[in-house]
Length: 258
Ligand code: HEC
Image: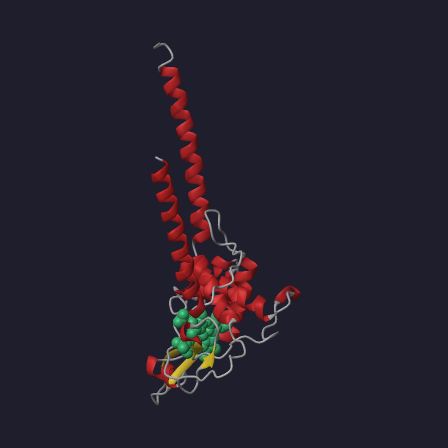
């Protein structure tokens, strides 16, 4: 018996050693991301709507010139706590394509709440030609991976550091990023301190903007998360109630049977 226990113990130790060695090798190439306490993870996860709203401001100011959110209409911004009147005002400040004029040129008009948010490039070739051959991805579903994805986006946004000595990009237009695969990315650091003016005096540090835009990206991919969790909790309370009721009824029905 003791021998079996000893062998199992030895096996567990070996497995632990192996896994730490492989993790160390992995970590060497891919540094671990910092983990943030996101409000939207876990069973009771919910979105901090003021942060989502600030994130939208950051997105429009610092990301929308390259990354689209092609499935989002202005009206969807209601889910982040804005009224249709507020959204109407935001929409009017943007111009969207409205067919051609008499001479065949693109015609534009102010957006309305039913329009989709404008895309930065009309096609992928155009996007590639100005981004070192890479296409800035669409953000509609990008934040879907909740915690992991949010930590990854944060890592990329905060990962612009001084390159180590001898760093040489593979091609022109690539810059050093500690967390992007291969440590080089075709996106320059998109955030600058106070690059956006927040309402209510929240200081717009780079980290704050990064957190807010990451929250916005997660929300964009899960606009119904709050509602879904609320319904989930109600269903669980209901099921617990039914379970207790069933138990009580069962006891009552069988109480005469010894
Ligand atoms: C000037 C254009 C430009 C702007 C502005 C820009 N990006 Fe990018 N972004 C790119 C390009 C191009 C890539 C692809 C990089 C690559 O593949 O090397 C990229 C990649 C990314 C990635 C990594 C995607 C992956 O492959 O995993 C993230 C995250 C990201 N951008 C987030 C943002 C956020 C958030 C903002 C705004 C705060 C932003 N970007 C602003 C051009 C831009």
